[in-house]
Amino acid sequence: MACSVAPALPNQMTHRVRAAPHQMMTRASTPPAPPASHGVRLSDFEWIDDLGAGGFARVSKVRHRRSGAVFALKISYGAAYPGTEDEEAEVLRRAAGWPHVVTCHALLRGPFGEPACVLEFMDAGCLGRVLTRRQEMGMGGIPEPALAEAAAQCVVGLAQLHARGVAHLDVKPDNFLANSRGEIKIGDFNTARILYGGAGGERPLAVPITAGTRCYFSPERFVPGACAGPHGAMAGDVWGLGITVLELFLGRFVVSPELSDAGLELVIYHSGPLRVPEEAEASAELRSFVAACLQREPAWRATVTQLLMHPFLAHRDVQASRRALREIIVETL
Image (cartoon, rainbow, N blue to C red):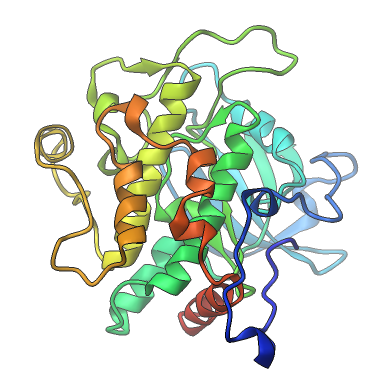
């Protein structure tokens, strides 16, 4: 894997190793084959455990009977937008081989013809689970060295999608998956939209952006019937990333999911800027990174390409940050 954790040698502990933007976008050295269903059936897998369920799908931990390999099986039973039932499958095809997007091993059909995906199993769950475990252990948010690495991997995952004309539209800690090697990959593409390219012909000039988790919505997504073109939809992802990084740092929700729609709109659309609190012990680089993501006007928000070059990511000590992130993830297992 391009982001495997390597321990720092003694003579490497005294200087910082900087990550150039092109290094962050490196493709996996041996890309897996594109997702395919040839010779694979749902009956080839045995159920181990339930991993979770949402508004459009349920996910289970399963074992392949013949090989013993463990996977996550996602069966969808709805679509965020009418007529987009197979949008997730196309997203996974486009993302095949990229190290910070969850790998799809097969695309199948469920018992009633619903889409089913055999995905790689990420043994640490999601970043939301990691944060919850730290809260339960009385540890608070994620310290900056580890947070910089987590943010870098999240940004690369989004950059890999955006480069292929895909907006995720549900960016939040629960949709960034982690494993015990310290790798983070973006998953759950039920609300994702393909904005351009592909064999399906021309895409609309704008797509609906009103589905997703509302406490991670950018202000413009609260407009009834809101639609956006490629730049606007991707700017919505950047806002969700900013809220995600801020939550990981603070160790708590930035915007309460228990608020009503009117309450959410009041906090996000009409209140003061969402920023790192003044009283928090945070670096200028972290404050600047979050501020770049949480600009109210979509046109003023940083793009993922710009975020890859931001000092909070590009100037981090790569080896130390990766080691710190892995240690934090492992201690929550």
